Length: 434
Ligand code: GAF
Image (cartoon, rainbow, N blue to C red):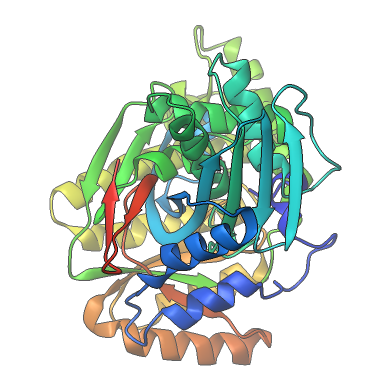
């Protein structure tokens, strides 16, 4: 998330108000008042742009960003997460080449990069191209035989907003490279390749949540993921509830180094607890009662970090139980407590996220509200009864502006399907295929 090398291709060097990006504006113009998205034109436009640039026909692929309902900063502790893919995609058109080159043009950055598959190495720090090149590097290193491919990218996941624009580009590129090179697609492996690209090529020590849900998301469902075994379960979301994402318009900047610091603090906690809890490998193996019992062994800050993680894992399980029992209201207190824990114990919130959550929580029809993603800016996730969504959007926008001076963006998005090839029909209809 907030790592400079991961998100910062899209960010500025200090914590700042989010700068609008073209594609975000395009997305907003495609979102109707009711929040329903119409984007049949998108793949057709992309194919036209591709032909104009590369002179050939192409195939279209897309991979979604994500919003996390609950389970924050638990993925790299081998814990549990409950994200959903969202209807904001990284789109790309791709066609094979006769050489071993990747030629990648970003419509967002209006820039083309060229690289040989035989000598892939990171570009300058924070360059957007490190994500697609890193994915090719990870696939080749993993033994996948790739061919040269021309790629045109158009990302509509808001950049720097904590909705995983990076995972979306990684997964879309990996899917396209494998497909164009005639490789079978194993979605678990795909997510792992993308995570390795980000960890080892881009240099950001992120967990696997974002890439995994971008691969495995399902419309109308959240996804419970065990980040150790990578077993997952789709959890149906109630149809009378909408996912409403509120963008504070503050980029999650401080997160860069702080994300790694949090990871290191969790690892320190595990090292210390190993002395008294034999066999533990990660905070996933520690219960809240065990942590409390051995509190005196830990530095107070490390204890707080660990407490967030071990209690958050319990909240994820509670949230899934509630959804499966049809008791969506029970998510309210869990989301509230998750936000409080992220703010006070993990210290990854900021005043804008706190204000947004507080304002949202006071609106009629709101089931639950919390920050989502790595923190230090970005978005909140709100579960809102469908009938209350219009008033929610209006009231939150007005109150947040009055309180912070920032004009928020508020997106209503269904839970979406994971990465796929998009078949563009002649009648402008879009059908989706694996
Ligand atoms: C970012 C990371 F990329 C994820 O792996 C996860 O750790 C998240 O922050 C916090 O839950 O999105």
